[in-house]
Image (cartoon, rainbow, N blue to C red; front, top):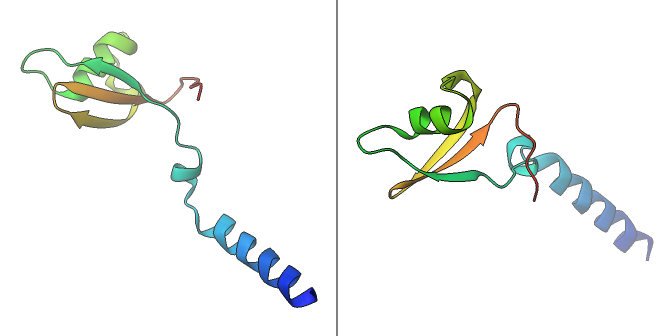
Length: 77
């Protein structure tokens, strides 16, 4: 019984320490359709950050849509 408890504690600690912070805190992105012939970062900046590309943290492009992660934005899951 002690072995099982010790093993489960070790396993949970191992999982907790191996998950990268970016994956652990990943939030739901804001999805927009990009402007014609414009890159996703610029489109996100125009629509969500008044044109400031420095506020865009991460972008995932999927077809004509862009999934935008902003730096100083509160995301709700």
